[in-house]
Length: 102
Image (spheres, rainbow, N blue to C red):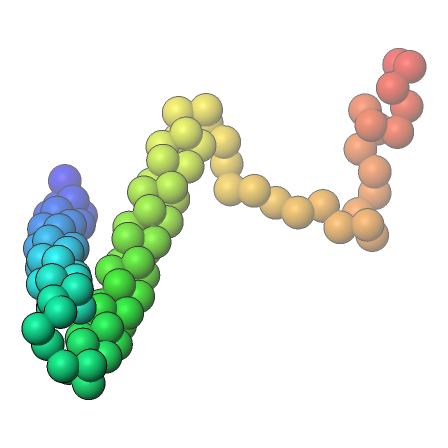
């Protein structure tokens, strides 16, 4: 339960960042489509929009990856799967796989 506390705080911070970045994107979009602004100003806001969207996308990708990893750990725990091991070609073959007729 103690390990969940930092995760919960981190999730709140991420949620706050996602909310703020989304609001910034909306603000940028309004300035970009405003015909009363000069071209140079709209160009700077477009760059800001692109940079903000890249940051937001990375945060969302990280969150998705963490969720997938968490789900995978839960599935592995549920199924009782131990950590995966890789069998190299130099290892002796398993007798069950070499002679399926037995």
